Image 1 (tube, rainbow, N blue to C red):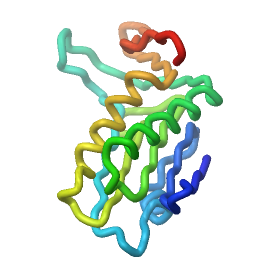
Image 2 (image 1 turned 45 degrees about the vertical axis):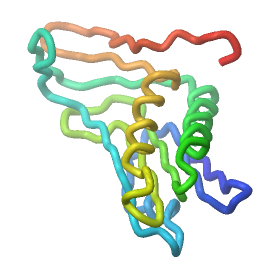
Image 3 (image 1 turned 90 degrees about the vertical axis):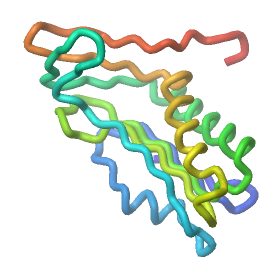
Length: 159
């Protein structure tokens, strides 16, 4: 897990891990004495998917190219800071490995002094941008077989 203290003294945590996501530990790392709000998004493994064709999921297997994924997570955090100056702490964590239904797979958390400072929007941006640019691959295993779920990201020049 990478912990990056910004020059401004604002904490940033980003990681690819096989370990369970510990929300309390992450919040402790990104909370300052001035923090009064935290917006948290956690993605979970669904046991059934009803979007499009309904299907059952036994488990998901996540893989990542860790050095590049963590570099891109830092980029997401930098983009959040550029757009929402009131954000104090940022945590971006993605699990890899075999994960079963009802298991958290990803966590984005942003903290700020107050809830009306863009902290919700910053967390939403974080998960959307992670899905867009961080190289993480997901294989869905169901009773019907296996399927790699492809994201929409295609690298652009300079990325």
